[in-house]
Image 1: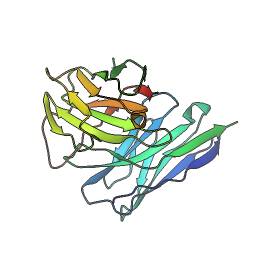
Image 2: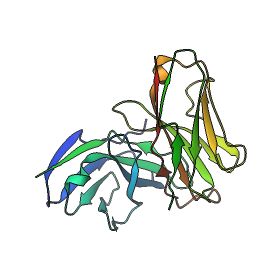
Image 3: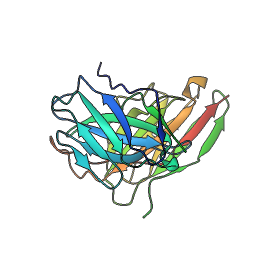
Image 4: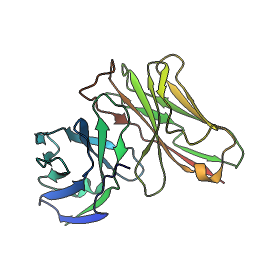
Length: 110
Length: 119
């Protein structure tokens, strides 16, 4: 059974970088890594995705290891509004089913 | 622009009642997905539509769960004879995806969900 594991919780000081790890050691060659976050009582919000190369957008950066067995989501300057549960997930290219990881509760504090 | 909308946002049902949950996808999005999220867990896939065709229903937990999208836009997830274990947040997502490809991927955008509580 494919598993995507994440630490259950992390703390980060406001203004500092938040680095959220994800282990997907059983990922297939054509599976994409997607990151979403979920604030209480809201639906998951898309952050970023990648296949092999590192990616950056206005929200975050995604670093994928060369063997693709793990990745790290980086929020460069965390704010209090970044407090949320962050989900690492995977989807097969051409596929339709997102498989979500266990999620990390990120708490950003003053 | 308008995102995915779902209604009702909250639903309380007595055990044995039937419920219907509605999803309005982003305008122009071809693909529509339903997920179930139990308390403290990540979302889990239920079913997928491309236009009006239900192409994957492998995640539906029992034959009490039924989904439809008759005109390729709005979708309804129906749960018959609800049980307490059906209590969860039901999430709908949509993506542009115009055709099945072996490579590439389209981002799924989620609605706020419907929280179903079965008493």
